[in-house]
Amino acid sequence: MAQNLISAIAWVSRGYAIKQPKEFDLDEEEINQMKQDKLINKKQSIQFRFSLTQDLGKIQEQDEDSSEDNLPVFCQDLEMHGKQSLPEDGYPVAIEDLSDEEKEDYQIKSSDALVIAAKIENEFSSLEVYIYEEEKANLFVHHEIQLSAFPLAVEWLPIQPGQVESTSAIKGNYAIVSSFLPEIEIWNLDVVNVLEPSMVLGGEIEQNYKKVKNLKKQNKKSYKPDSHTDSVLSLSLNSFKPNILLSGSADHSVKLWDLMLQKCVFTYNHHKDKVQISKFNTKEESVILSGGEDGKLCLFDARSPDSIHQHKMLGVLESACWDPIKGYQIAYSTEDGNLILLDARKISEQPLANFNVNKKALSSVHMSSGVPGLLATTCLDGKIRVYDTDAPIKNGQLQLISSYNPKLESLYCGQFYQDSPWTYGCGSSQGELFVWDMQESQQIVSHFSNRVAPEQRPKVEDCTSKNTDDLCMKEREEIQKMEQEDKEDMEEGGLQEEENN
Image 1 (tube, one colour):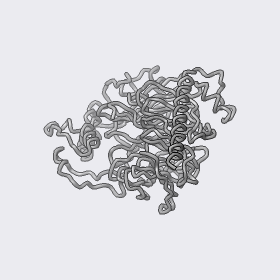
Image 2 (cartoon, rainbow, N blue to C red; image 1 turned 90 degrees about the vertical axis):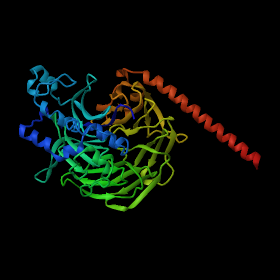
Image 3 (tube, rainbow, N blue to C red; image 1 turned 30 degrees about the horizontal axis):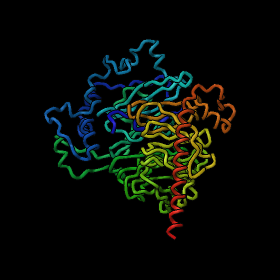
Image 4 (cartoon, rainbow, N blue to C red; image 1 turned 180 degrees about the vertical axis):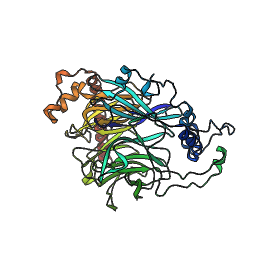
């Protein structure tokens, strides 16, 4: 795994973030209580959690005499809370210490797009909250939240978890984060310098560990009722009922959570290995897609868990998504660089498309919710590729429209912005977030623009970038060469069979 990378991202819809984020504040009594909290002392250092999860139990010895080193980073820094110190972005910790000009820059405007990025940097993990100013194409980190374990998946939550007003959920701005731990954390994005999540679903039951080295002797772990018992690899929020959350885990299970009740309401056990993907359908609120290392892509109704429709995957699963507009098509990618398109109504039959994009893994696949047929993939070869799922499929391959190399080494977790159908973001192995406005590409705009409403239709003459088209031509030439080689192999095989007969 790379030393620095962005492992997951999620876009925040406009109008949910408050204009001026609040400052997290603790009084002296609360600070002392947190220092003495058994859960904090149990969790140990971030470095220790990294050793525990990455090396699968090969715990590195820590200096047991250094009690301060065995506390999480945020606990070590409690004494500094509220004092003058400068984070990496150069702003003082306390918002009230900012000048009027700095405060204005710190404010979140209604036109700003926000992106949550789960970042791993050496042994440290965090959530970075970015602001993307679309008109200026300006991207910067607004604030960040320190995490205690490596993040694996992120979902944006538009309501306040556990809060109800007149039987209705209250508008909010939160991030749901899963990690190598068997728990799910929910963080308030409207609070800066926050030290603890607003809610934790599942996880281990706190125990009184006296010394770090004694953890080696703990063979049996205790978990909260209905908790996952291993890393949580995937998350999906129900778009119809945002209080309902889906999670897939390395413990082979898929769980359904109610964020208002703050508990798991159902567990599905149809997989026999790690569950890498769990996705709610965007058109039918009870339809679920899950995929695991057991080689099965499963489709089922949450209300009828015993009726499972299966597709035997054509490779090791990397990513999967629903077509958010049609609702019945599924695209998934594999570790060996294949891209597959399925009709969910005929999931056990042959796929609509199945072809190899690259020898390296296709790390993510995602579709625009506002431009019909617009699909993008990220790959470990560093390229973003754009396909049309609505164009005629020839020789089992989707039509390649464009490709782009932002030169950030390997790319991960690509996702379109739900409020701006042409805007696409992804993470990289260099720990950088990349945002691509596809309206800059003449090739993409000329191909897809007639499918959107006139007010959302960009003009081809306004496109500023043509370099993606040159790269796309090279990609098409490679595909044509592969098609020709496959055709020659088939013809040669046919001649050989005739000779044998």
